[in-house]
Amino acid sequence: MTEYGVTLGVGGLILFMVFIVADLARRSHAGKFGTFILYIALAMGILGFLIKVVITYMMESAGV
Image (cartoon, rainbow, N blue to C red):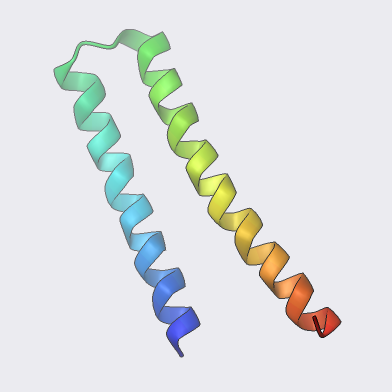
């Protein structure tokens, strides 16, 4: 049950961070390239979380 809560909680935080990055890019006048870089940094964090979920699933299914 905790796993689902953490996954949904982190998913909600990621969605909230998308709005934060959009506001940050708008307020700082980052331009297209700067906004792209901000979203790339956010995407790397999301990718790290997804990789953790996949690795955890693979380890649990292997019995480790």
